Image 1 (cartoon, rainbow, N blue to C red):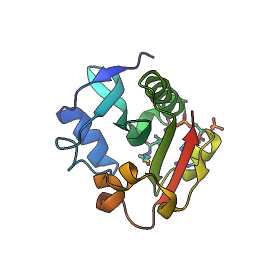
Image 2 (tube, rainbow, N blue to C red):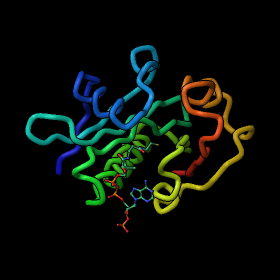
Image 3 (cartoon, rainbow, N blue to C red):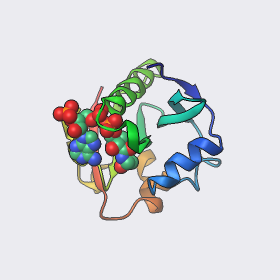
Length: 141
Ligand SMILES: CC(C)(COP(=O)(O)OP(=O)(O)OC[C@H]1O[C@@H](n2cnc3c(N)ncnc32)[C@H](O)[C@@H]1OP(=O)(O)O)[C@@H](O)C(=O)NCCC(=O)NCCS
């Protein structure tokens, strides 16, 4: 499976919306990178990386339902982590209501929201798009 940088397109947005993940800030977010894999000419998996200096938010992680539990999600996160390292990111954070156990397995730990770096607090995902009940997690690279 090849994971490559991708630009947001209709298929990618459809995949995210189908998973109830927020898309309204995708055009307006600075420093937002997407990586994905394809099958039959369509995006079958995607992960986003929102970089703010030495910290970044992992977001917009989705694998189409018929390809889940084959390791694709794990590979996408690993790819995003490697890209983050190359960009000089030292710590990754994320918000999730659905996949905290998945991220725990990948070495992410739970953090108090109030301890988030200011640049992460300022993201649209943190400040409004993700529910207040989301788990806030992080990992040092
Ligand atoms: C979360 C998601 C990306 C995982 O993708 P995936 O390709 O199924 O993940 P993997 O196959 O790499 O899973 C790795 C392990 O985590 C487990 N796992 C996968 N999703 C999980 C979940 N939501 N909760 C708990 N464990 C999960 C798998 O069982 C697997 O364990 P195993 O190797 O022992 O079988 C996928 O379920 C998805 O797209 N969900 C809908 C969107 C979503 O919730 N995104 C997260 C937003 S932050």
